[in-house]
Amino acid sequence: MAAAASSALRVPLTARLAACTSFKRRPISPLPTALQQFPSPTKIALSSTLLARKSTKFANSTKFLSSSPASPRLPVQQLPAGRRSLVGVTSAAATSASDPAATSANSDTSANPTASAGPAMVQTAVQETSADGAFKRTPSAFRSLITADGSSGFPAVAGRYHLYVSYACPWACRCLMTLKLKGLEDAISVTVVEPVWKKTREGEDHFGWPFVPPGGTAVVEGAESDPLNKALFVRDVYEKADPYAAKFSVPVLWDKETGTIVNNESSEIMRMFNSEFNAIAKHPQVDIYPAHLRAAIDEVNEWVYPSINNGVYRCGFATKQAPYEEAFKELFSALGRCEDILSRQRFIAGDTFTEADIRLFVTLIRFDEVYVVHFKCNRNFIRDFPNLFNYTKEIFQLPGIASTVNMAHIKSHYFRSHPSINPFGIIPGGQGTDYTMPHDRSRLPDVALPCGKM
Image 1 (tube, rainbow, N blue to C red):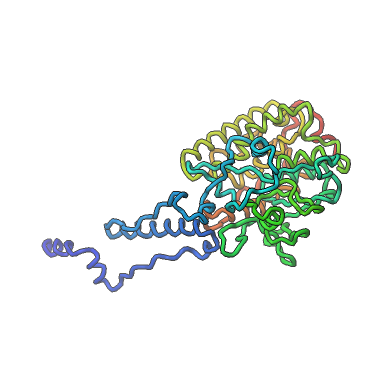
Image 2: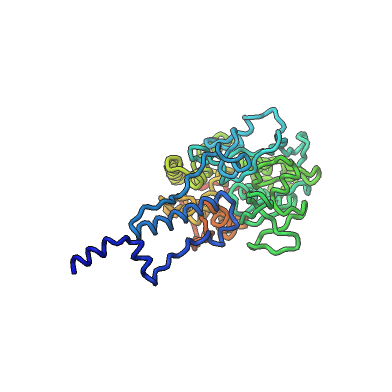
């Protein structure tokens, strides 16, 4: 019996499996149908991963080594030129350490800020990753200014300008918050895009912000059609202003009279809304960049932007461990710094609500529902920081602010527009935090009403 058993064991495993009529090797499953809409580089990477997992599983079951491991990603330089923009090539002007407003303005002050030198590679923020795996955001391209006296060529008059935004985008929402706080809703029209990126051109792998098609129905309630240019995508708006535009972000401040983009840098749009439209604003007394706090505001912005606002993206879009860990450490160090500051004063830059609070708020309000999971910023929730959490609730409860926070748009965008991070587009249930609950910020020394009397 022992000899017979020993002899049987010497029969190759594959032969014994073949002799078993019940054995049927299952074919390797194709990439799930839900992933077919994603860009080719993503599909290739996902397919390689799935094939590798299937091969490894079979190899382990039969004690053989797999001969088909996941294919490594080719260096960008070895890819065809037309594909390089789809896997993370960035502009030489990209910055990761400072506000793109400051970097862009200082890098080319003499050039026409709204003109491109020629055709550029189309890309999205997800692809702004350098060879070392670090996310490096490229600067905004359209940098004209609106002035109260019209000396810039763009006078601050009612009805001339239009703001394209996404409720999902923190950069766009800080402009929308400023518009609401100043009472400019009747002077500057607004269109909200759909939150989930879609393919913008047949034959290309670019995905971007869509509008509701003319006569169509919003996929996510609150999205709208483009009433001015009848565009299907934000990309169409950019290409009308500049055929060589290569990145199609929001916000977009559009001039109806000249049919072009005035500015797409959120920090500059905020300041224009704050100071240049007072003659037609419902709340001209609101000043989010008061003279006595400008130095403090600028100093706060200087570390909040790279470590917190952009810090969550540096965590989420990093493709290597070292830059992720660096961004993660900086993020929570900066949040701890905010927690300490807010234990002693009502607002982040002093005794008055300012643009620095708006810029911080748009990241805080998205943190627990999105960034903790999606961008792997999972050391703490904002609700774990008592001062930050109550500070976030206070700002949410200011007049007009809640209307700029649409969590359905926020979660739909992040969890369904980044297949390299969340391939199946599943939206987590989340905490459903109620930011209308009472806060404790009144325990701090009395200050003037945030933003003045409104």
